Length: 167
Image (cartoon, rainbow, N blue to C red; front, top):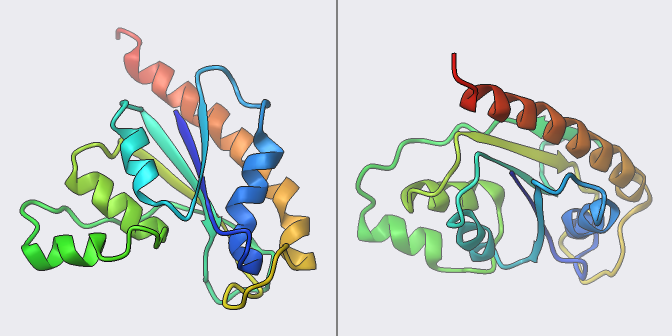
């Protein structure tokens, strides 16, 4: 299992994933890898090349809700059979853009996206300006999201274990 936390701590609430990674450090089961990729979205795809049964991506996610609202999302990713040159350019034009859907589409196109994929997101207050630190609402959501990640990890590990047990 992989828990991949994304974000830029120099852009306000975009640092949500980085803060959750710090909260989770050293607390996940040994069978779970925790990575904090900052804004390097390709790092997640590279990590997924190691082979995982599931991935949880943690990031600030714009959903139009109140700042600090934590979401658990199951991404709806289209099948990519043969990406065109334009598709690849759109995915790779800015390797720093770490939007979860782009990362996951790229992982699917590369054939490394696991079957179990979840996004734990938080509605940001602001991500547009140079500002170090999280807003009050998003900072209070960090431990909530970390607990949710712990719960999801346990659930997914049980599912993965059940999938490999002989019938």
